[in-house]
Image (cartoon, helix red, strand yellow):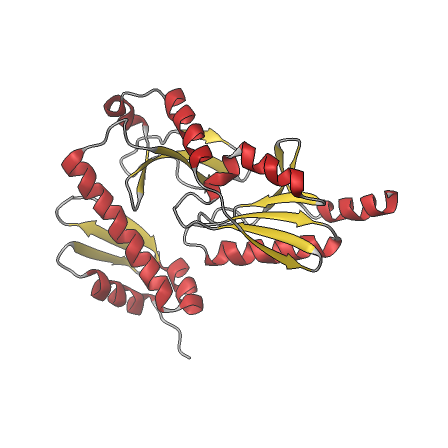
Length: 274
């Protein structure tokens, strides 16, 4: 089957999004598409290779995801322009890769907190079907300090419902949190939930946030479990709309430590000692 190229993808996006609200600038050299909203005067850039990779795997579902994200992003901008925003809006923490931009297109620094070597915490105003990252220029309008924003987010993430699906692979257990509310990965910040899981896990407890819409907790009981986990997180990282990290973490004594190949040797060593 012939694969879609960038020009075909741009044409498809034009068809799906229409040309009345947006102007389109295709940068062939850097393989990017710039969309500009004609009324708002704002735009966004899309990296086409990433979308094409997802299209070749998920077909039309990948295009539907991209179109939905674009429409919700601009809908949030339209809502903000009409109504502004206030401190009564719910604030949540959002996990992103450390490589994620730390300032807005306008050059305003986002409010962030260090998390791990792989991840950083951003803070978002919940706008219903989408959210808006809080930057320094918004603090005055919100009438909040940075510490108040962090405290509100810490409280909010603990109120999110936590349900999961359980799967067993080669004697290892995996728990998948996937509420699809935009804050699945954020639940890694719910200390109470992680401690509850630790209490019922028999092997090594691992925590993974390969993309925004999933949190994977592993009960790793043998060497094979680490191989399964590595393959699983790489798959989720590749297909996720907003990838975060393919690396997983060991959760121990309330701390998250990145897993490297040495983690497999821990299981082996513990077996020899027991």
